[in-house]
Image (cartoon, rainbow, N blue to C red; front, side, top):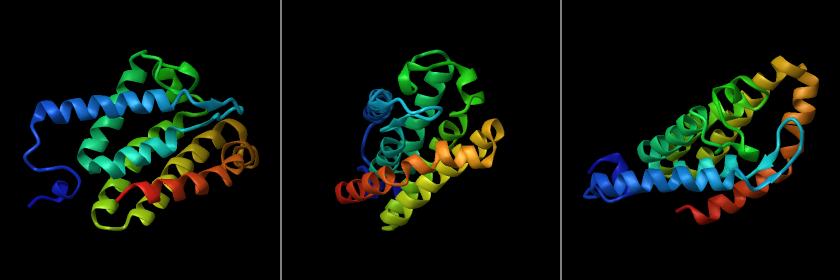
Amino acid sequence: MNAESTTLSPSISWPRELSIVFGAALFLAIASQISIPLQPVPLTFQSITVLLIGMALGPRLGGYAIALYLVAGSLGLPVFADFHAGFATFMGPTGGYLIGFLPAAVISGYLTQQHWKVTGALLGTFIIFGLGFAFLAQYLGTAQAWALGVKPFLISEPIKLMILCLFVK
């Protein structure tokens, strides 16, 4: 039995896997538009959806779904928060958060398979916000990056993580 089998049946066909990956990427694109427009980093459902995808689909399919989302956005499809798109988005103030999505999904998915879902959710969140903070600090300095890119989320993220861990088995 392979490691992926704890999340999805090993007998699942590649067309079904492909539709799961596309569906998850679409779900993330929709969740990205549910936004409270804080500046320079909006409060969205992106980070929690990234973790949900990784934890529910596992590291392989979850990673594929997030990679598809990131490629679609970089190629110009308006899937990022507030309908932003294009490769330049990765070079802007929110680029670090986007870059953190893929390792966060893969790691949270892997740790969930190992029955460490809370650790996976926390580590995934630290990856997203750590890379987001580091990138944003290049634009604003560390004090402003903390004040605008991390501090506003110190209440909302733990609440979202608790809810997530209740729903992922």
